[in-house]
Each structure stands twice: as C-alpha cells, then as structure tokens.
Image (cartoon, rainbow, N blue to C red):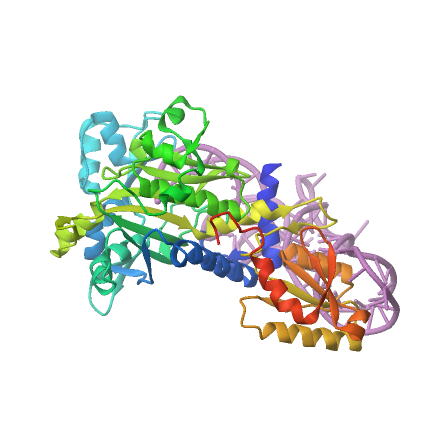
Length: 505
RNA sequence: GCGGCCGUGGUCUAGCCUGGACUAGGACGUGGGCUUUCCGAGCCCAAUACCCGGGUUCAAAUCCCGGCGGCCGCACCA
C-alpha cells in the first residue's frame, strides 16, 4: 500500500509535468532528473518561500545571500577534506559478491588506522594480513577507488577541479570577503541556494537520491565565547521538537522524545542555541508546508556517522511512504572549516569578539530541495476525496495559483474569459495563472485539481451581465461569486492562507 | 557494483511460457468535431508503442546473447 503512493506520485509527476528522468528519450544514466513545467514553478516558489523565511524575514541576525560557482578548485576541496573524505576504497568478495569499504574493513579487523593510504597500500595490507570477506570468508578482489566528486579539468592545462559536493564550501571560501564588504558582526549568517553534485554509486527512488541536486543552506557564524544564542531564540524556544536520541537508536526502537527546543539545549541534547533555534524554525517551516509535526523527527547522528570535528548532527527526517528519510541536515561544524581554510590558504579567517580574536563557530542547516518537493507531493496527494486524484499543495508553493475557465466553449464566454486571463497575467504580483477551455467544465476542474491549482475562476453567463465570476477553492470545491476587479487581490491573498503563526512566511 | 525480478502508445496493461491468424488488443488520457448553463457526461474521428543491438528461424513483442534502463535486497551515501 505505501509503495503504491510513491508510484502514484511518480506517475502523476510524469503525466502532469512535475519531473522526469533527464534525457529520458535516450534512457540516460540514473540519478539525474529534470523538473518539468509545473515542477520548475514549484521549485521556484519553494525557494522563494525559503528565502523569504530564512533570509529576508530573519531578524535574529543578519543573513547574506550569495550565489557561488559550482566548480571549485582542487586546493579548496583538498583543504576542506573532501578530496580525501569523498573517496572510498572499495573491494568486493569473489565468492559472495558483496562490496566492502576496504578502509573500514581493515580498521574493524586489524584495528589499524589507515586514513590517507592509497588503494595500492590498502590492497597490500589486505594481502599481507589475509583479510577476507566478513560475510562469507571469501577472497577480496577488484580493488578500486570510488570518487564521490565529479572531477573536471579546467582550461587547456591540467588544472584539476571538481563540481562542488556541497554548497557550503562557497560560503567558507567567501567568508572573509563577505565579512568585510557587509561589515558583518558576529553572529551573522550566509545563505545560498544552488546545485551540488555527488557521484552516488546507486541513486534510487526517483528524485530522492540524485547525483545532481539542489540545496538551500545557511551557515551561521557565531562566537564560541558566548552562549546567549540568537536574538529570536526566546520566541521560538517553546516550539516542541521531536528528537530521536542516540540512546533510543542504540536500543533499536525508533521512539523520538518530545521536548521544547529550549529544554533540548538545557538538557545538553542539542549542543547550542543556534542549532536549537533552527530545529524549531524548521518544524514550523515544514508544518506550514503541510507536514504534520508527528511525522517529523530530528535524528541525532551516531558518532560513527559524523566527522570527528562535528559537535553534533541532527537530521530532520520526514516519514515518507517508504520510510523515514532526511530532508534537512543540521550540523554543528564548530570552527573546522574556517580553521582548515585559514591554514591552507594562509588567510586570517578569525573575527573580533569585543577585542578578542576568535575563529567563529558554525551551525549549518542544509535543506534538500528535491526531497522537500517530493515530500510536499506525498503529503498533498489525495485519492478518494473526489472522483479523481487531487493535489492539495501548500498554496504558497503550488505552481498554478488560478485557472481561468469559460463555462462553455462559446464565443461570448471565451472572449470574456480571455480578457480576464490576460489581465491577471499582466499582474505584477507573483501569481501564475493559466487558461483552459478544452473539454467539459467538470473535466477541466479535475485537471486543475490534479495539477494542484489553488483556484478556478469560471466565467459564466452572469459574468456578461454584471462582471462577476465564480471562484472555486481546490480544497473543498466550494464556489463564491466575486467581482472581476477583486480577483487579483483574492488570488494573491489566497497564497498566504494558513501561514499565520507558523513562523513560516 | 553484486543478486533477484522486470522493460509493449502519455499512463496502466493484454499478448510472451506453448514463435506464425498481432495489419499488436483494451482502459484512461490527449488532439479535432458535434454537443453541453458548473465538477473526468455523450457521440464521431484521429494520432501515438513492442528499450537498443546482435543471433536462432521460412517467420521474433514472444526464444538466446550483449548493452542500456527500472524496481527490490545487499553495499554505498547526506
């Protein structure tokens, strides 16, 4: 049953133009998806809403939005650790065919630290010590490096570069410039929305695991000498968050504990207020996008899942039809990034905190755009409400805000409907409106519902007499009669319905 | 990457085992026309498919091999 939902979503996405595999007419390789006409609009709306929420309307500290290059030089990613970290030495068992990470295997079996060793060296260690398949004892073969970063060569020469594996690095690389040009004072934040690339071994589940994906990230920089947290912490501190603690995960049952964001810090579960601030804001943000709080949880990543420098990672996981899946990664990166970039580049990346030089600490919420789009689709999809499937999309992100429909295909009605449509199209408000006069009115309502259009505006015979139209609400199919002059305002205001008090828009 | 299952118009599918009557059938959707005064109405017409390559055969959607792609599991991954 739950698997069927994922299938329905994928079918709907193909049928209505939300997303489809890249280069599908060639059956090109997996892990790449294109957003179609509706998907592209929806993504735009989501990004705008996110920027509105986490950048423009942020009053707890300054947030600067940047737009960095997708291609980063070798040196930068060597410094960040990605060149070494994002390469896995792999080998597989000759007998049972299982793939293993050679470095992990050696550490587990021999207790040797092998970080930074080449694949040849690792192969030698395996051979000398007779390390075999932990599953069946078979011989290991096919040693090779798996690079998770896409390697490029820039210019005519040999200069190595990579497609960025995360947007975060641009922010650290720009840290000094931004701090100066914006005259930034701690705490402050830098945000970025854009593509990242990871050469996953086997991408799966449509747009959930992609090789090219979009991130919406914030890096908050704050002084490690202060524990007071962001200015707005008091406001959101009472928000209830659900945390899947390490203890619960060890015990093997996935019961999350509910507590206020404020208490999560005081009880030492969440390492600082900046992180807790974002956890609380994320709950509100996704609630405003139609995801119920009980279907969200923050999983405290286990020590072996986090890099050594991490001060604690909390993944916001959402319950999908196929299980819990991360949609936001929240990381406390301490001063790791600025420190390594400072060391490798020779630049001073410290800042002044009341006369004391400090390397700022960093909290990073990183939102996965495609996963969020998919989550919204799953939580909006309704079957059985009407004769046809219905997408009750959050009104702020739905691609189509209104459909203009002549009741019948008659010249008097279509020409008046076209006038209404073109007038709305010319609006300066961010309201995307479409026109449809093909098929019966019922069929057109059905199509609009399936595309998740917020409103249907129908031009009927009364319109010709008194310049009023009916406005049909997607969620309850109720119609009200309004003046044409009011339409633009109605459609616009309707986008923000339900966002009050969510801390979202 | 390994193993299992799978690949037919836009979507879902019949046919495949037991090659030939398949000029590949259906449903929904789509386009055009007629009709139609508010929730996939009706009638008529039309377009669109056997993943790719090779082999076996008089004959391949059907059997065999390879490739590509998908789903699930393992592994990998934020």
